[in-house]
Image (cartoon, rainbow, N blue to C red; front, side, top):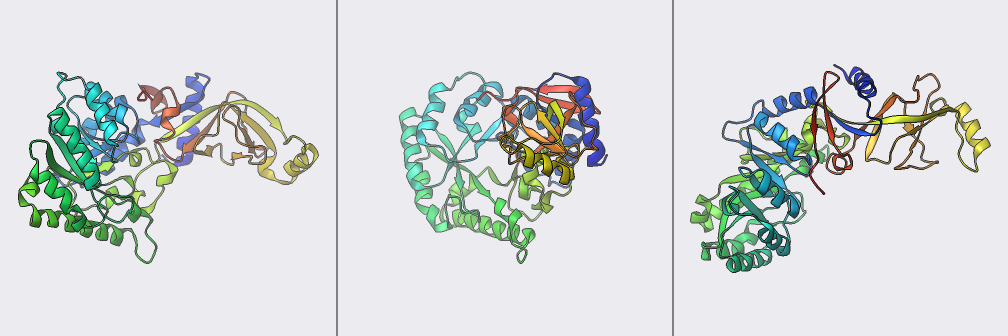
Length: 395
């Protein structure tokens, strides 16, 4: 099904289903087709790790996990650590960014033991400097526990982490000297910059460069701390923009993904050309009027509507101001002069487009992580019928 037919069918389905309010819609057929594309060709010794911030719904992640053959998750917000440890006690959790030690302390203060989740084995704290490691060491000693650690390494993104292999040495010595409280379990190196490499370099070469840096970090650990190197359980990296660029020669055995599965517009990149958009915002049409009337510019805007074919009708929607781009009906466009509104957004449209009150306008989110949480329930459609509802994670 091409995108035009898909959009038209989805708009009609959402009108038929009703509900009378904006909805975040997931096309389950397209979502599963993306899952198959991601799984095709993955090496048998490689695992996938679902990124919760990109798909912020425990119910949705539980639906996806068996299809991807994983219970590995990446989380970015401290309260979600406790939420997932409680409600998914068999999951393996990796932090996607370094947390202040106060956040780590809050996790242990709120953690409920006896539910089956073992933080010392299933929760991997991200460490980006020896200074932060010293703080975490103090916390581990005060709690008489062992922390599982992943070292954040800079493979070209330049957003922090250990910049060079030599910069890790103090941290490695600290871990080696305190095995009762600190354990090196993983590396994490994010290479999203490769998807936006300049034309003279290209994504494939940029990924190869990042992989070479990754190998250099691991080689440094094997040379200086061979005992620690033997304890490394996984090597995390990639992310949606570069996920499909990691072939059999990649040093990674733990690939992160999330947004790629629903493909918001920010992920319309050549490296993800094989994947399909699978998420839409469906907004009911509240009002339709001929022409255009901008306050204090009524005559000028009415004249402009006559001369600009795409501005000859005005449409007000239920809701708006989402991080999203209008995609249905074709030609639907925002009116920046009137301004955006989270309540009733004005859109313009050509005269010949048969949009009416109670019809549905569709938008593609530009990203998933900031948009999915704005809707009370994520609606899963299959062949135009509501098949599943996924509640978003609590804020």
